[in-house]
Image (cartoon, rainbow, N blue to C red; front, top):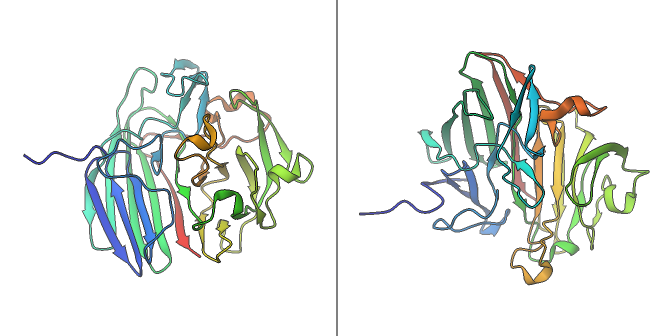
Length: 316
């Protein structure tokens, strides 16, 4: 009897020098290579996915502070899936086993349902399509409220980008964001939005490409500079000249950037192994949007309504 790998069923797609392997658990991008070069930090097929690496995040990305929120006059308390900080982290879809809907040589569509439960009593169908072409890997997420009541919703991906063979400190980052969200140092609880030019710019202002160095970042950015096509782009380049770009559409007004610093430092195998770039349709703790003096971007999906967002990873 053949057993299913720990990361779930694997779906391989190919096109234009790109090869991607998608794991069914969490609809996770397990590997993505261009001409044999890794564009993300991979993980093995028969491995429990490390954290949220490559996973689809829904019905919220990032954190719900203390796991508590209110929606339409009702209060809820989520399981604390980030116990070290006491928050509910990255939604409910990351450990669901997504089922195939359609597959071809260069694309696969997977779907799963978030069923009503004590702390999130709404019914959503999440469908995501991964498509490869000469421009890279495009992922599109569609969430439909198949229940009878309006539901709070947000989504985003969680790839760790790899620019090349040099250490992360030597990569150059270009991030076209004018504002950054200040958070508490210990629990990453949102405090206030700041202009990157005035708030520790050496750490937070990456509008012009420059070397990351020893910068430690685990922050959300907004007020994104987009092209005429409405697309925002983050570029990461290696001293050798290779690089990777993550771009996303107007549905995602926020992006979390994390230099993957681990508590054990360099002794940990994946310490600063890649740069997490996570476009998000909403801010951290958006389920508690009323606490903040900025637009957190929380969506309220009416029964039968659908939300859609997409992003692309490409080699440079």
